[in-house]
Structures are given as structure tokens and as C-alpha cells.
Amino acid sequence: MLNTLSLQTTSSEKSTVLPPVRIGIIGLGTVGSGTVKLLSRNPLVDVVQIAVKSIDKARSLSDIDVSALLTTDAMAVVNNPNVQIVVELVGGIELARQWISTALNNKKHVVTANKALIATHGAELFALAKANGVALLFEASVAGGIPILMPLKMCLAANKITEIAGILNGTTNYILTRMMEDGWDFQTALTKAQALGFAEADPSSDVDGHDAAYKLAILAKIAFQRQIDVAEIFVEGITAITPADIDYAKRFGYTIRLIGLARWNEERQCPELRVHPMLLKNTHPLANVYNEYNAIWVKGDAVGDTMFYGKGAGEMPTASAVCADVLALVKDIQSNNLTACAGMEVFLAAEKVTPLPISETTNRYYIRLNTKDEAGVLAELGKAFGDEGVSLESFLQLPGQEPETASLMLVTHLAQEKNVQQALKNIVALTVTKSIGCVLRVL
Ligand SMILES: NC(=O)c1ccc[n+]([C@@H]2O[C@H](COP(=O)([O-])OP(=O)(O)OC[C@H]3O[C@@H](n4cnc5c(N)ncnc54)[C@H](OP(=O)(O)O)[C@@H]3O)[C@@H](O)[C@H]2O)c1
Image (tube, rainbow, N blue to C red; front, side):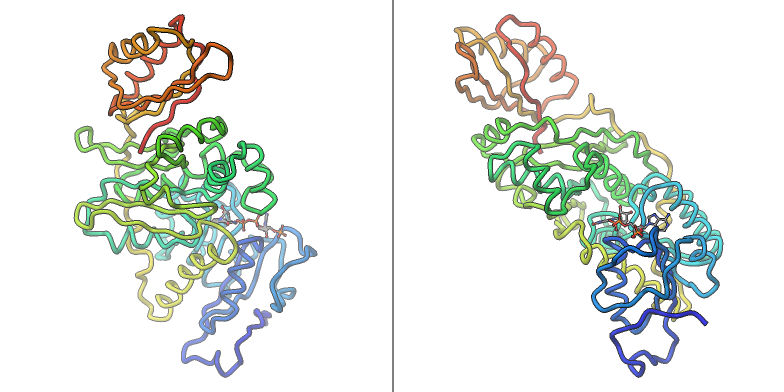
């Protein structure tokens, strides 16, 4: 007989009419620990096995004793005939893919928080789930504790979603907030984020924008009901943002945030999909999302603007989303009626769509240039932009870092990316230009 998790509930509380649903968990790190804590207080479930990498590792699970449940063999969990729902909380792609495929083929429901896997192999895994008559749920994979996938699939189902703009990564939002509020440079803010546990030892996936791209791919698949190749999403990180850019953005009344943008282009019948830093007017709701918080702004043709806000990562917020999926499945198992996976068809039947190339997108731009400080500079720059059809909305001139130089900040009207890039190439060749400091798109 299997040992099961000792619960903080009494045995009489556990004796519901139906027996508890048996859960196997792979991974007992940040999210796994929170999940065990939340499930341990719920009489509808029994955690019967947990796979980890190191059995002897010290765990902070309050007074919950899991020692009798641990194994280092994740395959033992997915092949365990006692397990009805497998919860994958390790991350990475290849091993997780094997575990989840085996679990689905064994007719077990699966819950995962693994954005990289769902973004890259979602279609294959959903096909497997469907073929086996089981569910694959993944609410925690996007924006941690914020309910967004289920609302998008179910509550906004009557809408045509036209745009999603999200702060989808808590690490970069913390870094940009601190740079903005404390005047820190990127490296100082990153070091602080690491010390506080908001950034990994290797932060590259976060600061280079790839983590947000996985989440954007999942959101866009659901919103636009198309297959999307995450590798086709345009991605630019935040490592090049300097305190000077932050300072100048402030002077224009803007905030800088890393934004995941999915916008349906009606004329071209394809989406714009991109992750890059953007300038937001201080009055924009996304500009008021600080530190490690996430938010997703969704526009639907019927509902108008909506915003979902909360903690996008962390032990208990992410576990909250994982456990919501588990409890939805518990209800389905107990009623013998599989409804929790409603909406997953979008990952199956949908045709693939290629995003609009970034060169063909239309944006307003913030551009910082270092130039000579002499008469006629503005006229030359204005002509270079004008020759490519780019018109200027506003500009600010400040003394440059070196003698007889100027720092020019420009904001353009709406212009096509390729025209702006061509204008900048022409501007680099001008004798009045010292360098191009920074180019950011404006939301
Ligand atoms: N952290 C967050 O805030 C957050 C938010 C949203 C989504 N997610 C996603 O949630 C998943 C888990 O993230 P996390 O932050 O909880 O990771 P984590 O803290 O690094 O924990 C990973 C867990 O996996 C276990 N593990 C590693 N290799 C294993 C193997 N071969 N077999 C069995 N167990 C293995 C580790 O065991 P040991 O404990 O023995 O080392 C550890 O318990 C990832 O997909 C991540 O993207 C995380």
C-alpha cells in the first residue's frame, strides 16, 4: 500500500462520498513546494508520489512530511497505476516531453507550468491528450498566479481578440522599475533582483526576452486560434537600456517596460508578434505595473479593454494556478465528465500563421541621437527622416556627454519600421551624427 501525504485535515474531513483523487508530482522546487502545501489542505486530493532530483535535499514544506513519497525516478510517477493526475513542475523540454507523453499515453491527466514545452510542443501533446481521452492543463505556464488562459479561452470566447499587450516577465519588470525609480544601471538592478530571488543565476532567458516570448506564443495561439512558431516571434531584450534612456523617457512623460505584443493585422490577416522594450505614457495602465508584478492587457471587439494583474511568478502564486487546474480535473474525474480541457482544440485544428515581419510593422518611435552641437543639425536630421516618410512629433535637446555635442531625443509619428531603419542608416552617414544612442518603439 502507498504512503500518502499527511494532511493538515482530519480523517473525518477526508471521508467525502467519493475517494480523493490521487496526484503524482514531478518536481518539488519553488512551484512544487507551493503546490504540495496547497494540495495538502484539500480533502479532495491525495498526493501519492513525488519525483525529485536529490532525495536528501532539505525542503521547506512547513510541517508536511513527504519523505515516504519521494523517488528520483520521474518515470515511476507517470507509470504509477495509482496516479490519476500527473503534475509536471520541473521545466525544460526533452525530459518533460517524455514524462508528459508517457503520462498521457497511460491515460493520466496532466497539469504543467512548463511554458517552454507548451509553446514549442503544445500541438503534439494536445493531440496525444485528445487521442487518449485525457486533459493537459497549463494555466500556470503564463503569468504565474494571474488567471489569464481560462478567461481568454472561456470568458472572452465570444470576442474577436484584436490585441494583447503584456508585462509577462517579473524579472525584467523588477529591473526596469528599479532603474526608473532608483536610477540604478541594468547590472545593479539585476544583481539586486538575483539577491531577492526575482532573477535566476543565469538570467538570460528573462532579460533577453525569450521567457516572455514563450508566454506570448501561448497567449497568441489561444487569442487568434492559429498555430504559431515561437521561433518566428521578434525578440529584443532589455540589456541595452541605460539610465540615460530611463531619464530621458521620464522627461517625455514615459515609462519603459518589456512588452509582449500580439496584435491582429486585419489587412494582412496575420498577427504582429513581438517582445521588446517599449515606451508607455505614464498614464497607461501597464506603466503602473511595478516590480515583479505582471499584467496582461487584452482588447476584445465586444468587451473592449480588460486588464489582468497580479504576481506572475513565485511559490504560492504559481501554485495557486497549478492547483486550480488540478481541482478542475478533480471535479471532472468525480463527475466522470471531462470539461476542464475545453478550448484546447485551438492547439489542434488551427492552421499555422506567420507573423508580420517586424520591418513591416507600424509604430511610433523614441530615438536618442548624439550629434555635433552646431547650426543646421536639426534641419539635416529632419530631412533624413522626411526623405523616408517619417515625420517627427516632438524633440528635446540636451547638452551631450562630450564638449560641443548634443543629445537629441525625438519621438516620431506613426511610421513603418523599415522606413525608420533606413532613415537611421542615412543619419549614421551624416557628418553631424556622432552615434545613435537608443531606438525604442512606443506603445
Ligand atoms: N518559479 C516560478 O515562479 C515559476 C512561475 C511560473 C512557471 N514556472 C515553471 O514551473 C516549473 C518549475 O519551476 P521551479 O521554479 O519550481 O523550478 P525549481 O525550483 O528549479 O525546481 C525544479 C524541481 O525539479 C526537480 N528535478 C529536476 N530534475 C529532475 C529530474 N530529472 N527528475 C525529477 N525531478 C527533477 C528538482 O529536484 P530537487 O529539488 O531534488 O533539486 C526540483 O525539485 C518550470 O517549468 C518553470 O518554468 C515557474
